[in-house]
Length: 153
Ligand code: CTP
Ligand code: ZN
Image (cartoon, rainbow, N blue to C red; front, side):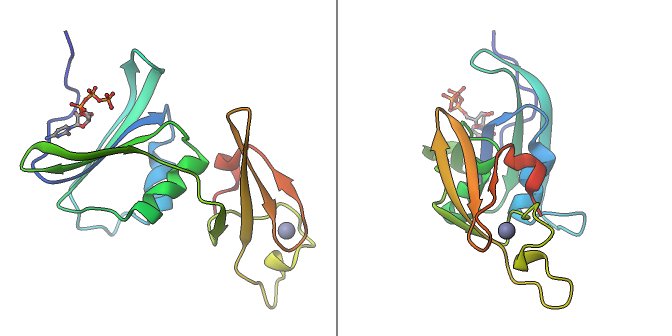
């Protein structure tokens, strides 16, 4: 039998199959912080047949844009999005990593112009998937990063 950890929602966005432990980082990527007025529920380390363990986020009353949601693929390439209307799933899709991300990742190269103390520029990274692993390369200095979860701004 399937247990329901968090209640179903009437209207909004369900982000399912998030890598276990990454839900807080997903909220950060979506720009949802302590000041939010949205009704948000979160389940962490829930048992999953496909993934062993997973996180789930439910944001009520809001359809988050696909562009924003796709950034989740940087840290959880298997996340699925369910857009819910009147308790029914209206649309289900998998996140797809964007080719370029701006202002999301921090370059670890301290000499990079994106980290300049006086005049930092907005970070730009080119995203690549190789053997199911997501990596990214800095537009300014060429530094390649893996484990993108450790480089979210
Ligand atoms: N969900 C919800 N509110 C609804 C409908 C669905 O919160 N009104 C949530 C479910 O709890 C689940 C997700 O949306 O976390 C996907 O629902 P569903 O497609 O019914 O589940 P699965 O078949 O298990 O999904 P998948 O095939 O993507 O694993
Ligand atoms: Zn750089």
